[in-house]
Image 1: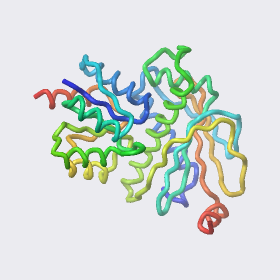
Image 2 (image 1 turned 90 degrees about the horizontal axis):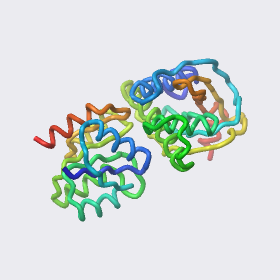
Image 3 (image 1 turned 90 degrees about the vertical axis):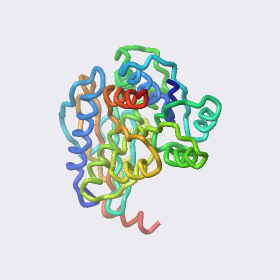
Length: 119
Length: 167
């Protein structure tokens, strides 16, 4: 399974990678620092699953998701954000996200997502 | 919690959410509160995030001696606390992310009582913010795991708020 992690924080990308490994995913992960970079990586590498931050410079997470859906791209898209409000969850799901993971998180949350996508 | 909310309540929220964060972070089990001050104590390094809404204007910060920031960053990244390899920019990045997570959790709490606010991006600072009549500070010294950190709340005073509106 090809997984892309989109986050402007290098530290957070490291933490999500570590957590995915703890959740049983033994892959090398694709990475991008914002939505613009993510569009390039998605176009080149066609990942199966995207874990994306909400707030980022250049193109934020919801703008990236809308752009992908407008292109007809149906990649599984999961937000990983520190803002777990109902408003954000609704906006994410309305635009085609599969799930919103709120920070701080534990490996079991990622494990559920991986199982769901694998199935 | 809003503009009229006293800094003590914000400090409580900050420490509570940091405690929740500690429970999911390797090597950090709990947050122990020590003393609270209404002035700057030591010069320190750390990150601040502003929460701004119609009824709210507050900055939340987590600061510590830079070497403590480094240990905290190591732990947060799942490394040994005393590992010396983490570059400075990664320490800055992690401190910003830690503060961002805690601020996001505070935002979620506020949304539950009907307040809509926005978060700024984290800003890293070293030293101390100059004392000013325009803002008040509440500073709680705590142990984050066994690391001494300061949780800081900056709020505009009535004078600071009126200056903001006039600018």
